[in-house]
Length: 95
Image (cartoon, rainbow, N blue to C red):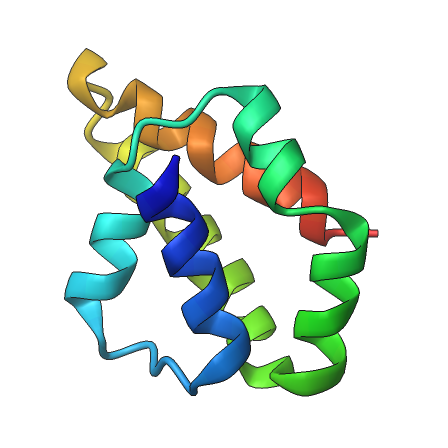
């Protein structure tokens, strides 16, 4: 939970490039329950991200979508939790 929160905080305080593969891979691999994602990525946090670091919000969307596409192409059960994290994050950031 702490690691997921740290990753979300990083998105609001610094620019995170799409090329920072390690950051993005780590974000999706952090085991998170629906409650944790919805508690930590509140609508207020999503708006803050939109208003202060729009490029990070766009990259978050793009990275989540790309991760889902990759999981669809290689549908192994070990990736299903990552897919759930992507969907949970998208549920919070897409209006």
